[in-house]
Image 1 (cartoon, rainbow, N blue to C red):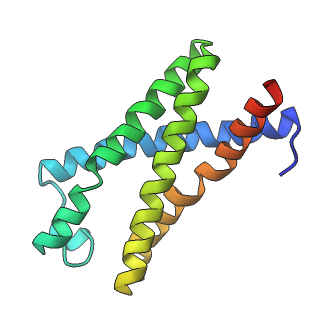
Image 2: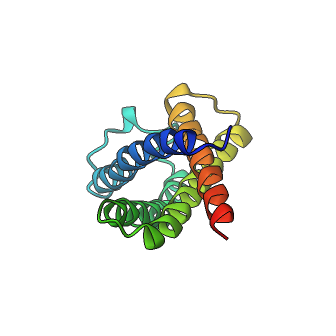
Image 3: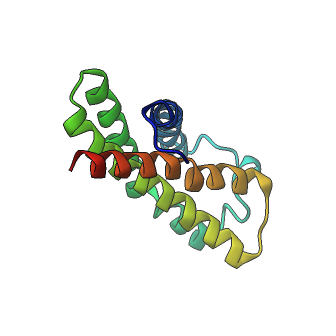
Length: 143
């Protein structure tokens, strides 16, 4: 990835749009999950297994924290508080990528390669990386 201001701008626009969709999606998913609105046939494999249910719920804090830091960063960025927004954005992106990595690793260990769960989790793992690189390079250039 070249490190020009134009490239950083494109990367961050994509990252911010992806963050908004992801962060709102995380909150919607957890609201629907906690209210038991997702039918078992649309959920992950072995959804009714208590161990897998516990595994799924182990992501609540990680996902909600990623969402809250991400949405706060986006709001602060729109207000022009870049110095505060960028560290929160970096934290949110790292948490989001971690959630994707953990899910992908789990499904790989189980040998379960359902595209319905792999594609969203690969997205969570991968979309933050260019934004993280851009934010770190931008921070290093300012230092």
